[in-house]
Amino acid sequence: MFLRVTFLILSVSFFSNLIASSNDSNSYYLVYFKYKHSSKFDLQHPERYLSHKSIERRKKYKIKIDSLDLPVNANFLEGIKNIAGIRILGISKWLNAVEISINKTDNRTEDIIQNIRRLGFVKNLKYLGTLENKKLISDSVEIDNSYYLEAEKLIALKRDSSICLFTDADYGKSFDQNKFLGIPELSRLTGKMSSFEIAVFDAGFHNAFKVKGMEDLLDSKQIVRDYVDHDNSVWEDDQHGCNVLGFLKTYNPGHYIGSAPFANYTLIRTENANLESLTEEINWLLAAEFVDSLGIDLISASLGYHAFDENILSHTYEESTGDSSIVSRAANLAYLKGIMVVVSAGNEGNQSWRHIGFPSDAIHAITIGACDDKGYHAKFSSIGPTIDGRIKPDFIAPGYKVNVAAVFGFYSGNGTSYSTPIFSGGLANLMYLHKNTSLDSIKIALKNSATHRHLPDSLYGNGLVDFALASTFLNGFSNIKEDLFWVNKNAVLFQDLNLYFASSQIQNVKVTVSTTIKGKRKTIYKKSFILEKGQIFESDILLQYLLEKRKLKKKKWQLNNLELVFETANGTFQKSFQIR
Image 1 (cartoon, rainbow, N blue to C red):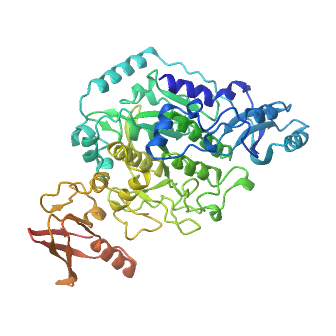
Image 2 (cartoon, rainbow, N blue to C red; image 1 turned 90 degrees about the vertical axis):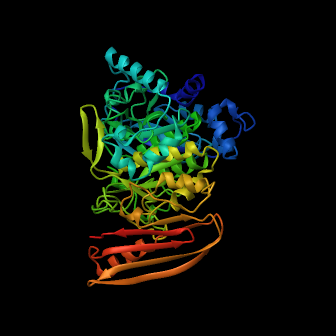
Image 3 (spheres, helix red, strand yellow; image 1 turned 30 degrees about the vertical axis):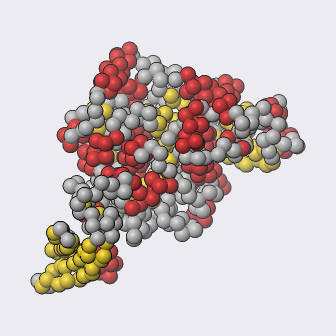
């Protein structure tokens, strides 16, 4: 706790210089510096500017501490600060830059900008936009003492819970959306995850502590940060983050279990729901640097950008190179510092823009689209690929008519904002269970477990993952004593159409696929394979066949009685499907 507080203060030391005015009509800029040398910090003593957990995370993944980790030169900041008419809002060590604002009614604006440019250590300035009459909200909100009592009850309940072997009934309203991804099976192996750290970036977490199963957000150890209003309160802001967080954190056995209820959470407001501004990308960047300093393991952000209120600043599809925008660069850098980054694809699949936004295009971020309760792409879910041809989204997860945990109960909601936290919680379980596995290896296992891994496209990406199967891949299907089939009892169609088999011996196996065409049974695929002992055989021939037929017919599938027969040395495995 001491370290967490210490680095909280270090990261926001300049927030104390802000003037809380009732109106904020300022022009915003990012001032880039040329270099970092002459800093009082050095690479040999990272404990002076990184937490123990942050340093240990770098050691675990063999990530070198470099100049990006060094704080911005304090002398440069002082030089900027000494120019009259400037307000410092945020400091980025990753970009070696500082965010400033200048009152747009100040007749000296051009002179101020020229004074900045004349400083020998300034590289350039980037205009971030002008915010009109932005109300700065107070950093205090009254919370009735009864909520603190409820928080203590939930803290005690979770502390005294010795196991996390949730039954299907324990999940209640959240079971269907979690079962798609194999989260219930994996969570039974994971345990409490009390040392796993998740940061959620959003537009606010209005009354989140009032949601049944999230009352422990009022724990004195809870860290929150608001980069929009520059304060330490997020409970009075937008509702969106509360909804998103519920998919992850809710612990309400018998009614609703989130995908990672025992993890630790840091809540960051980076988004101003009342406008679209490039400053929000800076907020995202600063938040990423902050949580890096805390030692966070995973960032889940249901946010995305492309169009801003000032059209001149809006992104174009041509910018989706994976590292052009500030926010995509921030997502990439967070990953390179050892933080898994999960972001939403966006909800414009059936709008004029259609594409994923930013940082959804980020090279290293895992981008999540949405599917319905049968695993099909939800029409609103934004599509890829990126301008340079990379497959995005990376995966899909339930995001259509999923159950949202709210103060008044539960309701059905749609959006990639919701598919993202469901996926993030499952990924957190997987990372916790395989603590010493590299992030790249985790991502490979996810892809290996996904339905469309051999046929990725701009709608599904690599498809639906099965986190429990991904864990089995990471274990190497260990201790195979007899032939092992992977069968997901809760599979949707795309998952059921995939075959996974681990061989306990050298053997010849045969795959046969047949279907009924015009009332007659017809073999459509037949092939034999020689497997070595311990070899994993996986096939998506059924999925390939169906997708090809769908492509040729250009209408819904009209195939019935599809059957797969898999013959092994120890017996025959058979799957039958009714495709409508």
